[in-house]
Length: 106
Image 1: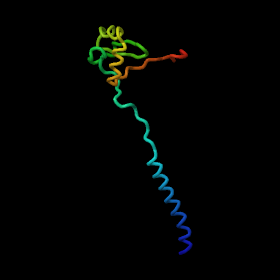
Image 2: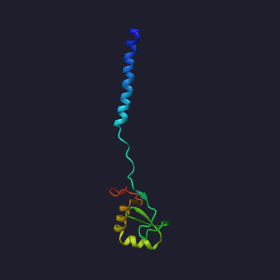
Image 3: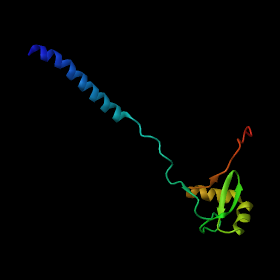
Image 4: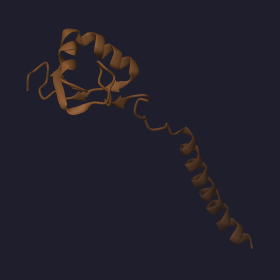
């Protein structure tokens, strides 16, 4: 009986340490970063607020902006900062079309 106790005690200690270490790791693990909340793809025209037509767009400031009609393009080009600011406040992401590095040009 004494031999069994001497063998079982270290085994029990190893098992307890294994489970307690796993539990401690679970509790201290940081959650994976998630995508920013509230950001969404463009579905509405930034000028008129109507549903976009994906055949009507302009590329400006490295972004592809879709519109409801061709008439809205000139309004955005006349004051792009106004519409980009409004879109940012609403959490709208325009399609990024940047193909070259702005620093190196590659």
